[in-house]
Length: 398
Image 1 (tube, rainbow, N blue to C red):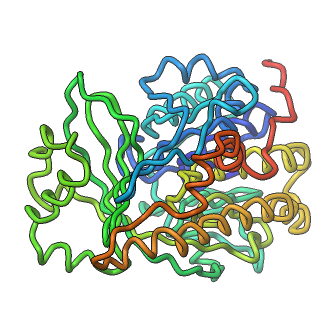
Image 2: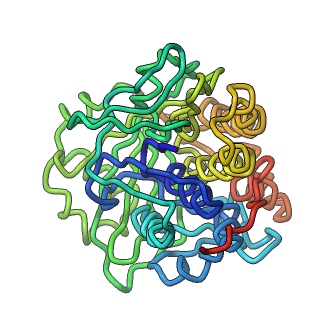
């Protein structure tokens, strides 16, 4: 079996199937996982899954920050929108952890298995076909990797999906994100997550020795931001988040600022004969709620649960592959629906600007006034709709 893409969906799927004795090759186009601008919010649903496969302790030794609530500030005050301490189970928090640390833990465990192979610096450029059936992939260096089943986990710009003409349905996203890091002093602490005011919105993540910053702009306005100049951007950042003042000099040019184009989309069909798409290749998520990594991991677990036994006997039929979509489509629709509601009712209004102060929306005032209600958005974000659990145990070691 061939998995295209060594992100969260691809590595989790490869590990789970290899534990069941399925021969898996994961193809990753980069030489390592050390890339920024990737989702790094690990939710309780994912932490629970790692506990189920015995990797919870290993992940806990990686440098991360536990956050038990999310707060947002508007012109007229600060509100708490989610209280993760109210969640059941052993992880009443969200873990902010660089994605490379998360992937390293998984890949190191998978490398112990004789049925798992991770090929780095291996970029897939096309799929191999036998008539209508996908029978593997071709790499940039001309290598052909044959497989009974190919799984596309290669993200929202999926080559596998594009080569097969699978086109997702697009949902309008009103914003893009500028992603950059700012130095942090050891004594600087802040429990504020989002800052929202007319025409501007910013989110900050405490990563220990630096702040990871997401400056939200209206869709397609990056050139206008550049035209204003870097100093104007940095002045806005420091005004919105004074705690960043001491380290803002780390942003020396627009080369230090990464543009993330926000998209929300999903495929209506995740399969072709011999092929399955999951994760962002099947459904790109907005950064709202930081759910992308966790939805991708849930897809991988569902895929392993549904297909591991069938892969022992050969390539599952397209109907058997489509069981993954039937299982995961409802959680994806519900989560994307939440993201669209937040975008349309909070983010769009903020980005429109204007002279009037941007006040706390009524629904957020209600959440703050009635603390137990904060457990509802916390559960939706952190556990999700129809969370998956690892159903199969590892095959005996020969």
